[in-house]
Image (cartoon, rainbow, N blue to C red; front, side, top):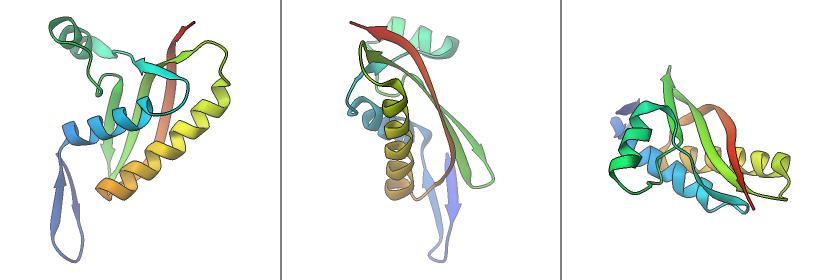
Length: 115
């Protein structure tokens, strides 16, 4: 759970909600073919279940801000620099607007490419 306090009171946002929000934002971007598993927990979960939007999303919390690592695949022939910049801006906007949580940094890892 990620907590933020303001003048109204304490706001708690679950990590699961945040990961699904980020995964949906990334997969809706042009050129992204899907989220990739990262780490043993996500790999085992993907073997047991179908792929999920929150695969490939890793969130680190620090001083009322989050750092986000994204692992995903892209289509062959797209401009990787443009996709990366677009995803960083869209994810930052979605998290800060929807959840009200400050995003310190978004790291993009393109793990696969499909033709």
